[in-house]
Image 1 (cartoon, rainbow, N blue to C red):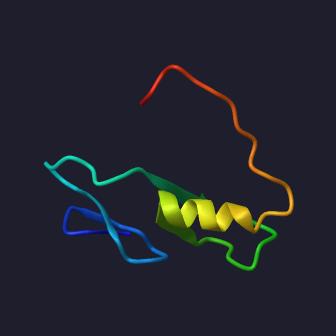
Image 2 (cartoon, helix red, strand yellow):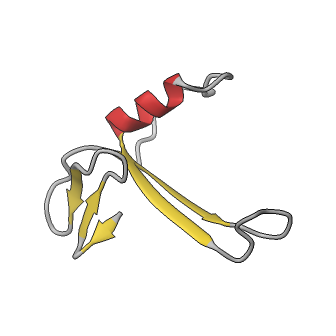
Length: 74
């Protein structure tokens, strides 16, 4: 969640990043525009997760996240 130039983790509420300052960690930003055939038709959902909450979320998946190595960091 972004509020006043600060990105917070939607799950734990921890501050992740503040405009003009070095990031305190990485985050996952998700933005989903729901379309036809959903109960959320016409809604846009957005959230941010800190790395710790992302890891916790992924541990609950039945099928693990696919991972690959990269040498290019963005």
